[in-house]
Image 1 (cartoon, rainbow, N blue to C red):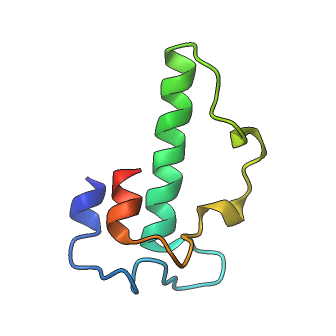
Image 2: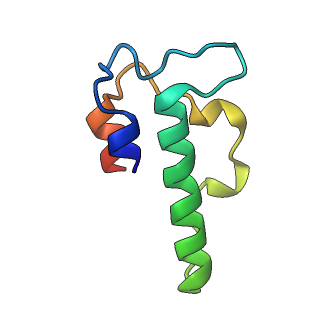
Length: 74
């Protein structure tokens, strides 16, 4: 579903937001990937990835070096 929603976006457009607090397409993809990993860890009763306990909102903004393909593959 995220691949369909991000279809047509360029790597430069992915981190763009409509407001300073909005995550943008790239940020939304990062956030959904984190939530999926979190719930899979919970369901499979495995420990969370190192450092995920201290996640903050800024971590959902794509880094300048991350491409849209990188985000979709995460």
